[in-house]
Image (cartoon, rainbow, N blue to C red; front, side, top):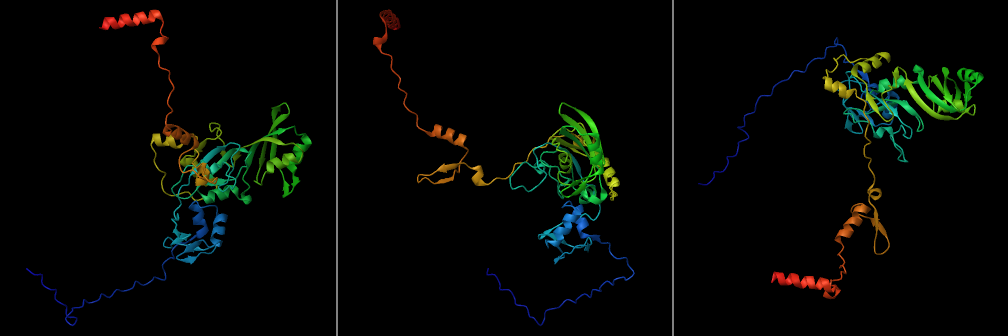
Length: 374
């Protein structure tokens, strides 16, 4: 049976549905305005950096609010769409409990994420976080060891590092030589350095052996190599420098060099209260005993594999015309082993034992043996 053709609709007989009239909600002028928060503060709470860094990020023009370039000091609400380099951001309008990590930094590592020389960095060992990033609270130079604090809260990092808060830093210093009483008094009163006067709040001798002597010093600022420069002003070089305390946080004795420790939730709340920061109103997450033991256990971090270019990773192989090209196979050892396996085997020159090589008694035994078989 043939399929009938569809009937064409008559546009004049088409029934139009009545349109619904929506009434626009009137805005209550007496309603309280929607609360806004500073954009750079929310970016810092999201773990993207300190407030000062976020202000510089906004000035660079990389942050937009509802498609418009953001300005420093701008307020945003939960309904605004904030983007960083066209990527939408999840801003924490409600305060969340940050993470705090303690690291016993050894010598030979730098506290920087970008190093053109490719040296070992403390950021290569940090565990990954879902939201935000790790912020180093204060820096230690390559030859300095000791306490290094990481957090995901830009406000907490700013409270530790900003010069106006004058948070104490305590160091154990070993020098080659010994200070006199007059020199110790002068170090507490102040010494003029290249970038201005500097001094220790306190300095205490801790003894020593031979030509090396230990001192415990406390100061309230973190200028570049300040402790070393203060001792070098008296021609006393520092042979070892170790930070043992930063504000209310001490380096636990059980955290050895190269190890990390994550602070408990109650300890993080104590740090927020010390810093006069808002403590999240949500109850703390209930952890099982196994989760508590795992979260507060000292661990040795593993270095994440760094990306290297293909030319650096692959050995070079010479072509017939003398030019070099990246070898697109395996390493040299594996390549040589594979070449040996694929090469044809050379015939082994083995001499066949002749009958003439046998002595008379051996010939007699052989003939008797053959007769017995017959």
